[in-house]
Structures are given as C-alpha cells and as structure tokens.
Amino acid sequence: MVTTLSAPKVIEIKNKKNNVTYLYEDRHYWDPEKKQTRHKRQCIGKLDPVTAQRIYNPTYRQKMAEQNQDDIQVVPNFRALGLRHLQQYVEASSTLRSDLKALFSEEATDHLLFLAWFLLVTRRPLSYAVYWEEGREGLYTGPSDWQEIQQLLQLFDAEKLRQWQAMQKESERTCAVFDLCSVASYENHNPYLQYGYNRDSEALEQNTIVLLTNHASFFPLSFKLLSGTMLGVNTIDSSLSYLDVDASTILMLNRRFFSMERIEQLVNQGRSFLLRVPTRQRWLDACIARHRKDIEKGVHLLDAQKREIRAFRIDEPVLPVDGLHVHLFYDELWRMNQQENLLSLLAQCKLELENEERVEEHVRLYETYFKVRKRSNGKLRAQLVADPMQVFNASHAGFWALVTNTDLSSQQVLDMYEKRNAFERRFDNLLNFEDCQNLQVQNQTCYPGRVFLQLVSEMIRSHLISGLGDSGISIEQMLFSFSSLKEVSFGQSLTSYRKPLSDVQKQVAAQLGLDLHTRRANSITS
Image (tube, rainbow, N blue to C red; front, side, top):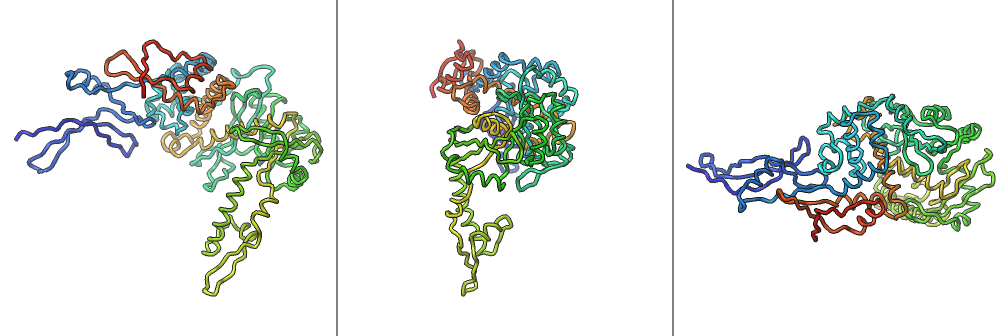
C-alpha cells in the first residue's frame, strides 16, 4: 500500500541535555501495519537562545532557493547592524585590539573580543556564548564550543598580566584602586577563595579582586587577585606594589576594612583613601544627631540613578586621627523604603509569634516591638508595646557616611563610591553555576583568564560611555536600542531592509559619529 506524506511543516523540539531548541521539517503519514500515525523529520536549524529567532542551516536555505517559484518558502536573513557599528566605533577609538594582539594570536584576539562583547550585551553566563548567533554577525568570530572557551581562558597567566599592565601604564596619571570583594563562587576548588564569604544566605565562598582604574574617568586598566579579603595595610602595600602605582593612588576600600588602627596606619603612610563607615558606630550616630538638620538641608547631589541625595561635609575633628573628613549623606527615598519594609516586616513578625514560628534573624524585632500573651482559647496573641513610627522617626535610617583623607568634594566622593558598587555588581557571581559546571572556570588555570575577560568587557563599556559623553543616554539604553537595529533580506536578494531609526538610535549615531544610512538599506514600516 502506498503511503501519502502530508505537506511539510516546521516544528520546534528542545533538547533537554544541552537546552538547545532545534527546528525540524515534519511530515506525517499513516502506517497501515501499526495502525497509527508516523512522522518523518529532518533537522533544518535551531532557535537563537537569546533572540528566539529561527536560524536555518545552509542546506535548507539552498533547498528553498532552488524550489519552483510556487513552492518557495521565503526565509529571512538577519544581520546585526547595530552591534557591528558599535564594534567598529570601539575599534576606531581605542587601541584595545592592538593591545590584545600583542599578547595573543589573531584568532584568540577575535575570540576574546567576541566573548567580551557577549558579556557586555547579554550579561549572561559565559558558557551561553556558543549560542550567541547575533554576535557572529559582528566583526569577530566566536568559539564554537565550551572546550575552545576553556582553552582560551587558559592562555592568560601571570606573565601576560605583567605585560598587559606595562602596556596600560602611563606617566603622571592619578589612579584609583577598588576593593571588590563579594564575587561569589559555587565551587570550592579555587585557591583564590580560601578566605571570606559573601553576605547572602548561601554563604558562598567569595573572590577578592583589586581593580585598578585611572581616577579621571575610572577607566579600568588592570587587576590583582587576592587569596583572601583585604583586611590589612600590608595587603594594600603588596597590591599597590604589584600594580606598580605610586602614593597618589586613591583607595576605595570595602567597609569591612574600617578600624581606627588601620585608618591611622594609612594616614601615617600617606595613602589617600575613601571608606564607607559601617552602621552602628557610636561616634557616627552622635554626628548624625548633632548635624541632622544640616544634612537634610545639605548640598543637593544626584546619584548614578539621578536620584536626589543630600550631603554635608564635617571638617571638625570627630575621629582621633588628624586630617580626616566625614561626608554625611541623606537618601530620602531610601528612608521611605526602609519605613515600608519595617512595617511589612513587623506584620510578618506578628504572624510568626502567634503561630510559634520564630525566626532567629527577627529576635531583636520581637524584643523591641512585641509582647506575647496567651488567650483563653490557648492561642497566642502578639501585641505591639512600642509605636513603630515613633521608633523609626527617631532612627537614622537613610543616613550614611564616607570617611576620607582627600580633598574631594561630596559629589566626587559619592561618584567614586557608586562606581565601586557598579563594578562589584558586574563582577559579582563571576563564577556562576553554569560556568562552573560547563567551563570549570573555578579551576586555577581558567579563573585569571575569566577575570581578564571581564576586564576587557569593562574597558569596552568605558569606551562607549566616554563616547556618549553628556548626551544623557545611558549605555544600557544604547545597547538595548542597538540590539534591535538589524537589516533583513529575503532569499538571494541583495536588497536589505530595516525599520526607521528611533530617536535614541539617531542620538547615539550623532554622538558617536556612526554612519547608519547605508546606501543599499531600505526602510520598512512596522
């Protein structure tokens, strides 16, 4: 009996082993012997894991092109026009590629830049880069599999870091050093993770990265890895010596470094530093209480999110070390959020007490705000014994401080502190679970290369930020806008189409000097 195949249709099937969704041309028919429907399938491509676009293989595209006109299935071809233009801008305005080529081969340089752009644009685990088809439309070729990425990371070693630092060194330039110390790892086989833990509930072992930048624009230059946290002046001395920077370097240290003994040692050595003051310091509470009205009516500043911050600088001696300035800050929005959080948390504590499900972290709240009595029916009743609003209004929530021995203004101090936090967020969870499992980046041979790759990505980010200048457009807005800037062509046609440029795309093009008006591209309306 002759079986009849149905008309072909394209279906999607996800492979659970590698999480890749493949495209199949499916045709079904009736099997008279088994008395059931059977399928004939042929793999014709896969889905892009980032954009979810269909990527057909060359054989299938050629097959479609060779069919009769009546049977042709038009397959669109996309080109990431926006990404290519941004890459061309960085190539033209920096020596990044030539610096990398001084250390690596042409192929390795292309792979490194491909991966660095992947980290910048997607902010996904590095192992996902092998599926980043959009990136392959740019200037660089990417690794084809995880083994190539591992081999690439293993190319970087202490000698290459020394050569890199020598290339980035410039005379008479004030540098800044950032102590980034909450980069968590899901593995424990890394000698760089021997000491210290991050602050979340998982208590993951953490990495400490000493990041070197210039001070004018905080452009990243190099780094040093520590086997432990920076809790001593000797560690600072060895780190600055390794990074080959002088006494003019400004240190932006983590607040766990705070102690009067360490601060006095830094001052005696002539080190310039900024340091976040930990909460619950008696002298700090006294300063806030004494200058509270002055802080609330202080200098008007804007933080990185363009939120209003009030600042007040204390020049009078409040600490037993000479030459220190205390910058007090007040964040009204933060205070309002803390108030809402307190009320929500107290409602939760009330339920925990009445249900006898106490949580160790809430013991202080239980003791401060509640009294528990047993009702006649045997159930517990939690009553407030203190007015939460009265207690909160008397608190110093929303107030915080930085201490420094520099003459930087409150705005400059705030900018440097926020820059540290921004660096730390992007380096945070550098060793995510996927990369530890797929790439073994926690291994000592891969980890320095992974940090270097993040450094390259940060350098690209800084070049783009510098190009945007005072346009008011953030790099996140630019990347999001340009990721959708694509050209599309159909079949073998040489004519390509794209949507009209958005306002953000036009502003970025004008700011960076990009020529987005290619001759062969035609506009299409959405």
